[in-house]
Length: 168
Image (tube, rainbow, N blue to C red; front, side):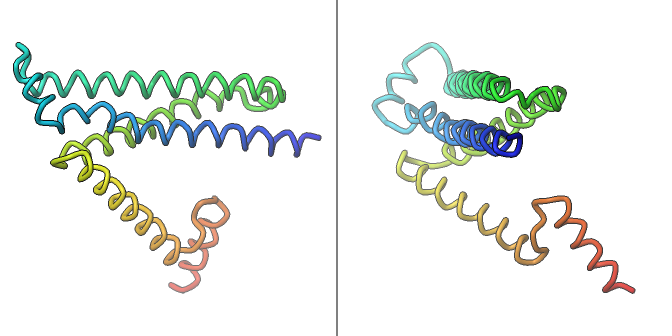
């Protein structure tokens, strides 16, 4: 049944996207933790490379990890879709999905790294990340309450039609 296969593949791809998103949030914490300890900083400052270059190397290393994890998730999703023979329907959309997912993961990684880098300690960084995640959720929920369901094209079209009718 094509409908059951479509639902099955969507679940598998969403699990892989969620995994990539979680890992894109955890990797900057793991990459930037050495800069939060006084003992580690004394050791790092003893090295012949300045702190800014060392932070850039850690940041780039995290970017490489995020790319590799997204690529592995992409390959897994590709083989899942091939097994369900659903990729034959829209072969052009899969590389676009990978590019958009990778861009989203890089944005999540960059924002998480920026927020965590601004904190004084590891605990402060984690607390700030939790607070900022609730702020993002609050903004999304507020927009959804004001404009209704805008996650689908049909919902956005209905919102625009209602606005046009109010103006007339």
